[in-house]
Each structure stands twice: as C-alpha cells, then as structure tokens.
Image (tube, rainbow, N blue to C red; front, side, top):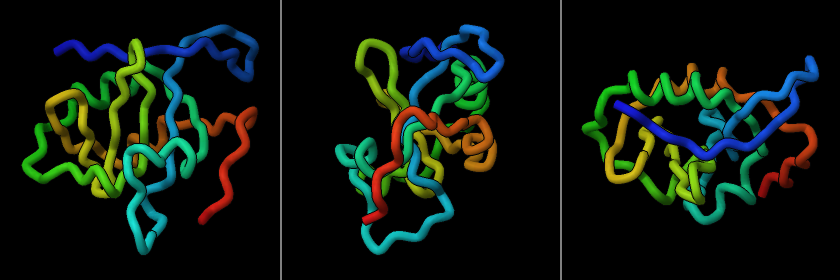
Length: 124
C-alpha cells in the first residue's frame, strides 16, 4: 500500500534539511465538553511537524477501523499532498481519503515535534 503526503521543508535542530509533514494536534488526553470539527482543528490545535516516512509507516501498518470516524471530534489534521488533508478523531480513527484506520494514538503522538515558530492558540 502506498500513502502519499504533502511535505513541507523544515530545518532540523541539527541544521540538516529534511522534509516533514505539518500536523495540527490538540491532544488525545485532553477532555473537552464539545468536540472540535474538522474545519476548526487548525485554529484549535498547536502546530507540529512529523517525519513523513515514519507517519506513512504508522498509517500503512494500522488496521482498517470498524468504528465510525467522528468528524466533529477531531484531534489532529495532517496537511497532505496538493491540499489533501487527513484527520484523526479523539478515539484514534484516522480518515485517509475514503478509508478509515485505527492508529496507535501513543505512537502517533510520539512522532510529533512542536513547531515553536508557530504560537499555539489559546485554549477555549
């Protein structure tokens, strides 16, 4: 299976250029009274970067989900190729195009590195 993601150029802390995906992430462990809809996750979550190769591997190894994806309780938005994005809901169901997979939420969170050049939004 081949998954393609849009990449943004980033300079690592060591000064080496590498290509990573942009991720807006609110956090799986934070309880909310109301969910975050897909359209609002970029303004609600902090900006992160993630290694595209490792993220692709995580998604490729994730099993198909039998649970419904909750588009009004989103916790992550990964900016994809040519403006195509994918989302992860609070229960760890990722919507990748027309298919859904159950991701390992801990593994996903560990792939993220906070992008300190972009201020986090105030918690509402």
